[in-house]
Length: 315
Image 1 (cartoon, rainbow, N blue to C red):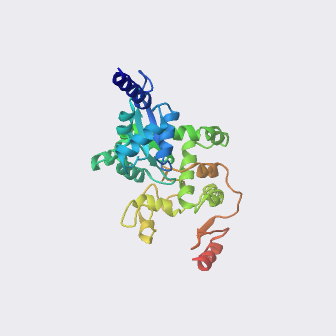
Image 2: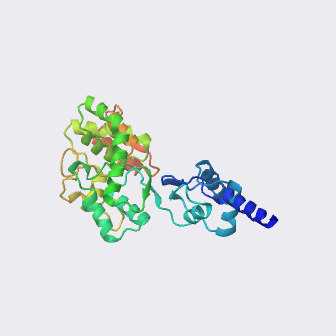
Image 3: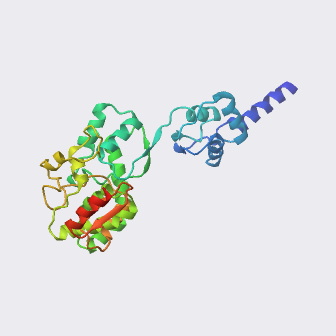
């Protein structure tokens, strides 16, 4: 009798500590970030009602998983899982991975990031560049918003592209009316923002560069922006955004702002909000030229003669 009682008590204790929280529930995504340690993860599991007991689960984790890391990412869990099932899941590879898209990357660079994070093969990466990001003419570049994303490993390239576009639409929505009020097409705004993003040494430069771009457009001058030549050249030995040389200025392309007046046919990168803001709210300036010195400090000039002086003095 005593043995049966003890067996039942132990079984009840085990169920209280390691059993599922609920009998029926829908799957949910449990996220782990880079800065969370084991204890943080276990506390969060308890807060989100995915385990019953923090101390018991931590003991189980340390005893069975040893030094095995809990990787950052997303894990598909269910409240009808017991502690052992939850443990097995979060000490395996995550179902969703964190992907950081920096400001100013072109879509091919984004494809490289995705290929590494999602283990894409060469065909999948090529499809991203040529098919997934070419569903509409205005969506070829500029709308794959730079941000941090949690992406399912089984999500297709086209679904990921739409995910980025959705984030762009969300972030850009407050600017749509503002551009319209100034009689600027949103596609024009993104083209200019993309130039600003690639040309600026930081957000502090962006309004001035925007003012100079708008000044040159209004005067019917060629923009002569090096970043457009880098975009044309692509990844040729020096990386995607390597130094421009004289030969690059001779390339005949609709993107060449050295060959043709006006804006390039499409954006040259995917800009962030600071560049979009600068395209809309430019600095009032008489400058028509600018350069960055070796310390990335910007210097502008009203005339070409002044610009040549800046080249001599700062480069």
